[in-house]
Image 1 (cartoon, helix red, strand yellow):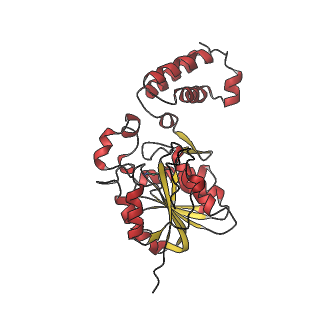
Image 2 (cartoon, helix red, strand yellow):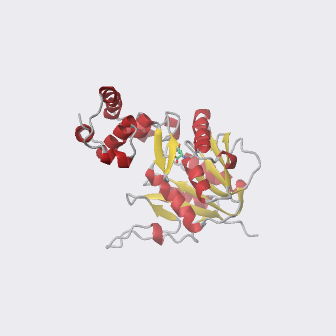
Image 3 (tube, protein in one colour):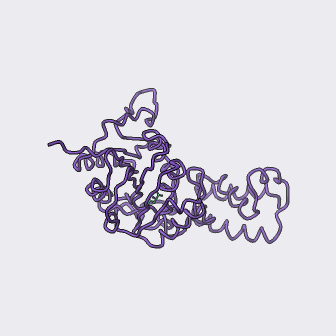
Length: 306
Ligand code: GLN
């Protein structure tokens, strides 16, 4: 069978099971098995696929048709234009999380400053490592409670040539981090309310680690812990930035305020969808994702005045 025909067939099957990225996923699988980059994939559309590759494609297609995310099949996911290894120990990086990087770059444009960055619940370390590629003299710490996740993070740092600027520590939030201060603290913590987990789509529920999803009764437990303790680990003027669930902005603003954080200096015009009716008004500190959902909050600690 020719590459183009195989692609058409697999796209159709993936579409039938409700995969919204069927066409892209089918191409990624074919490129992976045939070891083609995008250009060669286009050039070789009419080439025949050999029997051995067809076998291999059949096996991997079966996994894709059982809802396994393509990144898990290929053990690889692109984030911020970089390649990350993924496996069962880590949350699959999501494109929406790139908003955190964009917001940080906007409010703290890259310079040669020796920034210190802390990534809480680092997983693949996609956030920390992407930032290290943008801030040339920065260094950072990725924390995770999962030792298996840290192995993936470490490997990703090595593959990207960033190990000398990234340290990984096993710790339950701040418990084992010691005395250190940072200029940026970021986290995309588990934020799904426990009782909502069973209703998640199969490609999330069956493949992302539960510990990376479950944020306790209202999904906000990790934010309470982090907001309460973060000030001890922040340099003056340090930034705190979170990803959150699409309906958690109000709850998170309350928590941040409660622990002395303030968002007033962050004008979010640039990160607010433009819409003709003006229903979405920019809110200080709040950024929207690609699907126009509230997704990221940035804040500063307001040092108490005596
Ligand atoms: N920091 C990682 C990410 O953004 C993992 C987050 C998590 O496991 N909740 O992808």
